[in-house]
Length: 248
Image (tube, rainbow, N blue to C red; front, side):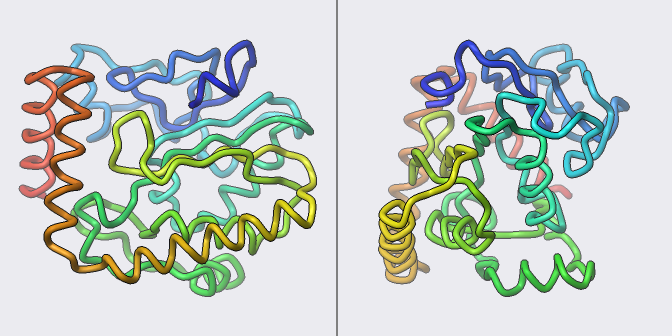
């Protein structure tokens, strides 16, 4: 889906990785170019890590306003204690008509499944007070969303952007959801449609929460997508990564 909207454009990737690339025309933004646990994972899998082009926090990027065709990231936003601030920064740097493309982990399809869902009200309070919770000890995530929860957050910010596409199950790895935002004013019909989608997805999440059979189906789906993408070696790498997180 990223290539459907972003081919031929230039933009920024926040926290890019060499072992799971988007293969787009991007500069990689990361808070450090030194060795981190994430860079170690890249080295373990690929023998090298993706070069960092801009060393800066992903929510405080030293580029001009409206200078980028897009901002893209995968499994990044949940690592920001103040995701509203990050979203507003990405909105700032994207030109009118440009895109913000995100893949965000779906809490029911990751090791965050036992965490309480993060509400819009909680995020608004973090943004206003700059008082943040501690990250989850295993995942180092500050926020935990379902697709409907995140669509609700997008609506709450009341920025001149609209959701032009989304996937409840992303087509890259499958354990998250994908959202494509376009920097242009949404019409009333767009907003009403999105409100209905968010409400429906939140209701589905409420009814499925704690359903062990559904969790088994999700894990099987993730394994099948990984097998098609990277073969048995890909599944083995995912098992080793989960073991690494469990040790922490």
